[in-house]
Length: 123
Image (tube, rainbow, N blue to C red; front, side, top):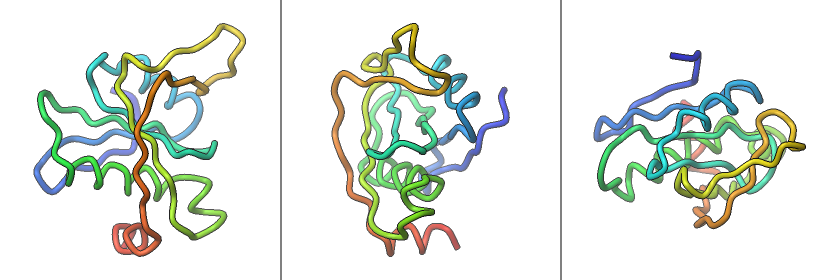
């Protein structure tokens, strides 16, 4: 398995995140069509994948969103709340001319991650 960032949610779900454009590309390539994937609204974020079958709890989703926000350029630059988008693997696509680690998403939902949540998680 690639050298992804990883952690387990409080309920034990494995969360993987890319570290750069190359690992983001590899993470998305191996993502299942029904897997949940996250990325910040702003560019410069890891793609984050929840490696679990079946229903994902709101708590697991929120923990994955905080993890995504923590490693984003938006957080590192601004130290403010971060908007994270989540979507299914089947909604991700790429055109041939797009650069490494860049994707488009057909439809997504947004989660607002509060500054305090990121600070607490990063400790």
